[in-house]
Image (tube, rainbow, N blue to C red; front, side, top):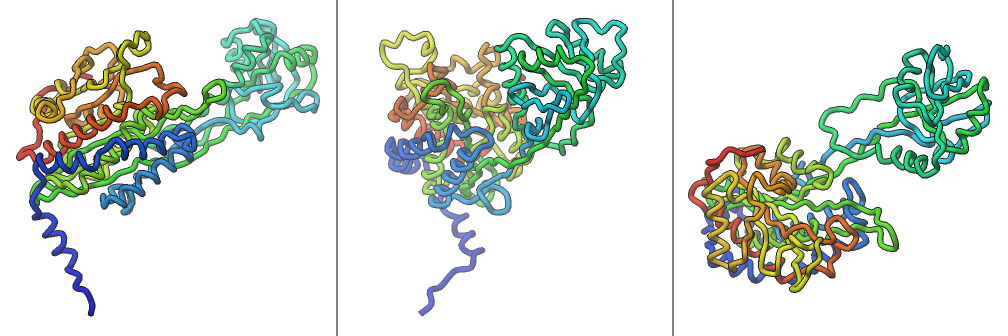
Length: 480
C-alpha cells in the first residue's frame, strides 16, 4: 500500500501555522543541543591543522564551508545561498606578475628571477643599450636605452628616465637584506580581493626591475651592452563563498522577516616562524563559527515567529569582504533583516592571577564584552541585556560599547557591514589576548564552559527578537 504524501503547499501551510516556540521551551532545547561536547567536536575540526588556517581564499576555507553545509543539511536548515545551495559565491581576483614568463638578460645571458632580479612594475618587453646613471639624470640621452640607476639614485630619477624616453629601468642594490626584502615585497603586492567590477587588463608600461647586489655589480660593469627585459603582468581569478542557511519562522505574517546571526569562518592562513606555521584561529573566529553552527542546530528544533538567517562570512580578516558582499548582494531582502547578531571570539578566558600585559583586556570565565547595545536601537539593547539577566546572568561588560572606543571594535567585525545598512546589531567578543593572530590560538586553550554559556544566551536572544510583535526600532543615528 502506498503511503500518502501531502501536497507541498499543505505541508508549508501546516508548518507556517505551527505554534512558535516560547522562551521556556527554547531554553530547554538550547540547553540540550548547545553543549560543550558538541562545541568541542565542531571546533576540533574547524581549527585543525588540516584546514591550514582557513585563509581567504584557500582549500582549507573551502573544506570548512563544506563542513558547515554538511551539518546544516543534517540539521534540516534550508539552503540560503545561490541556486538552492548553501553557498553564496564571491568572485576574487589577484593582479600580479608572471614570474615564469618575465625575464632579464645581459648580452643574451639570462638572469634568473628571484636570484638576480625582482619586479617593481610595468607590463611589456624592451631591448636597448645599457646606460648607467649614478644618481642624477642630468643631460644624458636615454631615449631608447635601458637605464641602470645607482643604488643612491632616488625613485624620482627612475620616473625622470622613463619620461625622457628610456625603454626600461633597472635599479641596483648593494644591501643583501634589503634586496631579499624587495623580492618578498614583489610577492606580497599580489593579493586576493573581491572583484566587484571587471578588472581591466593591465596597460602597457615600461618595465622597472630591481637587481640583486651580485647582478648589480655585473650590470654596472657592462655599460653599452645589450639588455633585454620583459615584465609580464597577470590576472588570476577564483571564487570563495559565504555559507548561508535559513530556519523558517512559523508566523504567516512575520516569517518573511529575518533575525540574522553570523560569524566569520576564515582566519589568516599560514606563515608563522618556527616549527608551527599554522594560524589555527580557534578563538578567532573558530569559536564564533561553531557557536553559530550549534545555534542553527538548536533553531531547527525551536522555530520562532520570524525566520532566522545564518551567515558564515568569508574574508573578514581581509577587510570584512564577505559581509560587505552579502549586504550589497543579499540572498534575502535586506530590508527584511530586523537585527544582526555577530559572534567574533568568545572562547578564551583570563585565568585567575594572570598578570600578562597581553592578556590585560581578556574577559574572565563568566564575562564577555557586548558591543552595539547602545549604538543604534534602544529597544534591541534593552532586550539583549534583559535576556541575559533573566537567564544565565553573564557579566556583560560594556567597556567597548561606545562610538569613541579608541580600539574601534564596533567598526572592526562583520556586524558593521549590516549596521551601515541601517540594521541594528550586537557583537559578542572576549577581548584581545596573547594569541590574537598568533599560532598559539589553538583548541587546547579554549574555555568551552564559557563558550557554552555565551552560545546558549545568544541563541535565546535570537529567539526573543524573532518572537517580538514589532521589529526593533532604530532610534539612534549610526556614528561612523
